[in-house]
Figure (cartoon, helix red, strand yellow):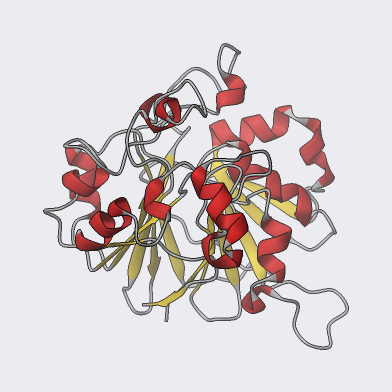
Length: 309
């Protein structure tokens, strides 16, 4: 049985963001935890005992403490159910949480060679001693079975695939440690329980909904998809930045080329937006944008949402 827990559904900085007074952040501070979102990550398991994370956000310590499924087992002095972390990109909000996992428990980091090259080039990640924390390269369109810490099979299969995106913003104008090829900077994942055949897709960053991407996810039971901004120029209009969503590697929810319209004709049982920015009005319950999201069959998940396939 495939289980998925949303650890965080927010974009970089979460909601409320520490230094932001936009409408979404003000509402989150005023209305308690209903609107709070930590930075995007999910955990999945095939047996309910061993779990794998997709991305390790800067909020990981908070997320783990809030998720009973990921607590150490009763009576154990040191233990974690986490067997591995799969990275889909090298942005700060996808990798910084690894530094909170430095206390010596064994697990494996799976990532494309370009992302691993970035980790290797930054000595701070050496706190993850490779005797305990192995780093394993993954390749586009090559499925792999993540292993448990003792090397046994997990019964799960993960298929990485390329989606339109960009390299991490902190590398703009600099030499990429992993080379200049565009492949590998932004991945989507298909996760399958080999015993049941159930699967879901995770796509937290996507600059464009292509026909190839549509064909990939059509017929899925569950899709987590990039919901960073409602409209492409949202950050500019709100006075919060000078970049469009697409220039940051994120397609808008709305518009004729947006995710809602482009994915409307697909046969997907359950569609959830995540990596939702604090500027996105669809985050606000009762807003016109939230109503449009829900009428189109999409959901805005709360942190802690669990889905069983």
